[in-house]
Length: 387
Image (cartoon, rainbow, N blue to C red; front, side):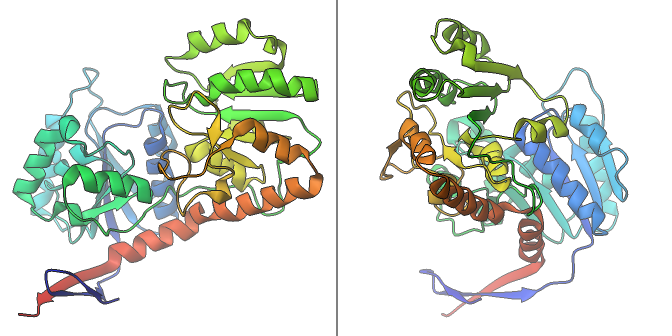
């Protein structure tokens, strides 16, 4: 690929040597979306013969148990119960690697881990951005200043979970970013396995109960309308968080309270898959929305901080690699309730939405995403000025 920039550079890409050794840097392995990404990446890389070293700079966490028996993986973590912001024991370990062979790739998952990554010798250095405010100045001002000091071109080494996060990061950093998109690599039901069921009246939402995830609240109001259409409708909420007490109170005061169940967190990954079985539709955002769609369940995309029950529509109606975490101000919005009723209109319509969402979900399929990630990491970029 050859691209032209306003600075009168020609940018070229050529194949570098194949990647064999990879270092990953993150804070800890407490339950969370990025932490599950670390688990998926480590397992995928290990299964394909890559040598992986995982550095955790702020203690371990329960998800670490999923990686302790994975072959070809070295985990470096000091289980410091004081949970320091930066573990100096680990920093000294990282510094010692400077006298050893370079890692072919060092990949980090946030601004602070990106800064720490410069302690490791690397043939190539990349960092993922998974939150729209990761590089917002007031959150990480000191880290960004230090990154600029160490590497004025640090922003060229960023990969983004989706285009919306890329756009918001570009605004925060103040530099044009034409970097690659690296979406969450996910695994779904097999092609012959479908959890969506037109005859079911089971609606599911999965996610942390946080203030910006307002769909749990307005779905209670929507359920009051849906049970008038069909008293078999039920709404199942999976997750926990700071808004749990307020949500329970709203449910208790609702005429639909006998049709709404709060299940709490999943004990195992298998519990999550079982929760999606025999489901009419899914309402939510992010990874759980994609996973549900990948299992043949029509996914209605929720909008953050929205008290009115509005949506851009089903997952397949979103722009590439978007999953509802961010919305454009120019988006056409619909009522979530109307979309649910649209699915009720006919089994043909239901199957059409299910098929389209499933196709869209496979943008995030693990093999597809990770193979593109390795290709991006193996490409060596260089440029020269025309004059």
